[in-house]
Image (tube, rainbow, N blue to C red; front, side, top):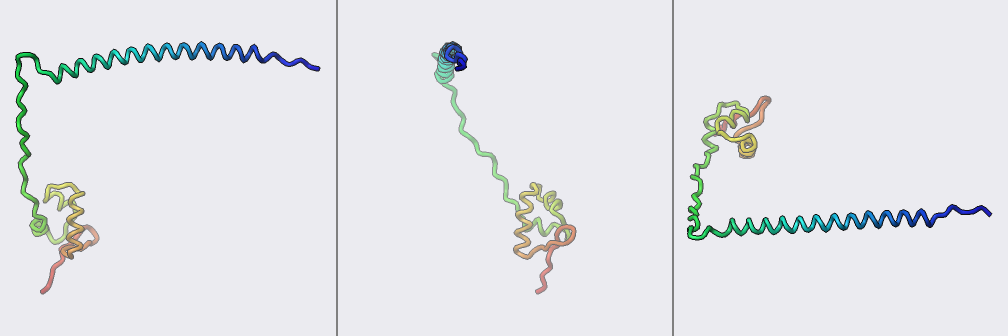
Length: 130
C-alpha cells in the first residue's frame, strides 16, 4: 500500500501562521482603537472650547437674519407683447433675463393658451381675429 503524504504537519503549520497573523491584527486593532479614543477626546475638548465663551467675555450677539429684498414678479404677458412676431426661446431668455429652463415653461404655457404656435425656426405669435 502506498504511503500517504503527511498532511497534519502542513495543516498545523498553516494554523500556526494564521494564529500569528490574527494575533498581530488584533494588536494593531487595539493600538488603532486607543489612538482613535485619544483623537475623540481631543475633538471633544476642542468642541467644549468652541461652545463655552472665555471667562469674563460676554457671548457675541447674533444679528437677526435679514431676508433678501424681494424682487417684483416678472410679467410674462408683457414680455410676450415686447417680442417680435417671430421669435426664438433665446430671444425670450434675453428679454426676460431668465435661463432657458424657465423660458420653456412659459413658452409652453403660451402655446397651451394658443397665444403662440411653433413654426419652422422658433415660434410665432397668434393673431386673433374678432
